[in-house]
Length: 339
Ligand SMILES: [Mn+2]
Image (tube, rainbow, N blue to C red):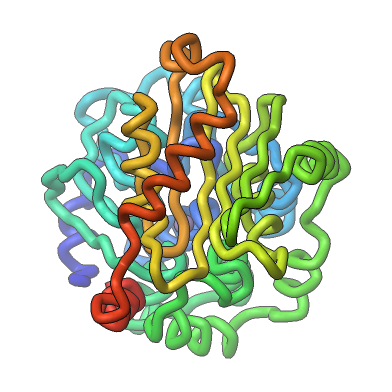
């Protein structure tokens, strides 16, 4: 990370920090942290997004940390000359709408699906985008105020499912840095109270529909719910003692969106999701322990009658085909921890 290069690149331009669509706590906190960091270096930037901030946890963040995030529909004058830094997402990803501005920089912690050349790129595979943003303060010796440190720590805790998922040494290092400067009681209080009544409907549907094959759990939600809710349900299913791999899918734009979680050493969630959905005419991908995907409406007609069966079959077959051998395991697990 060469933070001075980012500052030099952005200086003199109208700058937008674009989070992925329907931003989650990690995206919101990382964008906010980056805005504060840029301001400390004499630059103003506007946080923006497509979709909505309508989940309990994110609405509360905006209010409680004083984050000003602007809906793209309220930025009619963004021009092609304006600079965009993508935060917690990458250009060409389906969850990052292409805005008029020029995506000159990217700060993200996800594996790259479709490569893109940026003038400044900081993509590091770690537990949360907030960790990367925290490192800008640390490495540049920029003073971080308690509110910003608390927001980043909350984003880090949320995206790593309280340090259970995808955590690297780097995240722990940033946790230590933020913990010294944040109000951790506030983080814990927010973390323990982020479920809304509407989330219970999604839980209810998932519990009714759950099917378990071997160590794989499937659940379906038949109403349009937010990405964050599908992910939350997938974590929940994974919490069952007999489940080590969970596949949750929910209605979205006439099709289905998927959230997949893995805690086995023999499966790679990203590869399995990509291949299983490709067979059905959809797409997806992601990390070793978490992945997401999509089956478009156009593909449902062919599958209609046996839809749920076809999904389960495709995932079960792919899990069998893609099983990582014992010899490979150590290597893959090590790679997945460090990259
Ligand atoms: Mn994230």
